[in-house]
Structures are given as structure tokens and as C-alpha cells.
Image (tube, rainbow, N blue to C red; front, side, top):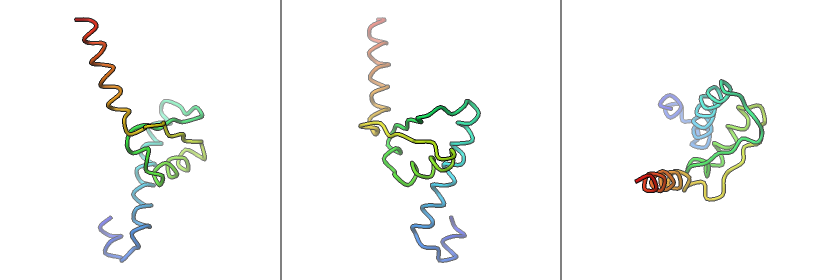
Length: 89
């Protein structure tokens, strides 16, 4: 990023480069376990349309679906763990 900033690269192009770099790393990890369509993305990052597009491209055009209320996925999971823990007590 520093080199892009010093090269006076437009902010939109810098953002795209960051999205592409993140998507490349994510797709490399996903490919290790195998990709099945559709890919579903949750968490707050799923609301970043640039990253979703870059991830789809990095996975070879695989459809990446975004969960409804994606930003609450971590909170839902934490609530389920707390509930299960309370049930065992």
C-alpha cells in the first residue's frame, strides 16, 4: 500500500488492490478444503461488496452469497455457545 500511495495511485485502485490481496489469501485457504457452490460469506466483512467481488473472482467466478444480517454472525455464534453452556450447567 505504501508504494501505491507514493505512486499517487487513486484510492479506489488501492482499495481494489487490498481486496484482491485479501481474496487471494482467503481463496488459497478455501481451496485446501475444497470449494462447493455456493460459497456463503458471513461476518461484517461480507458487507464489503468490493471484497465479495474480489473473492468471487479469486475463486474462479464462484458465486459468493452474503448472509442476511451477516454482521451479526459472530454474535449469533457466541449466543449459541453461551446457551449450550448454560444448558449443560
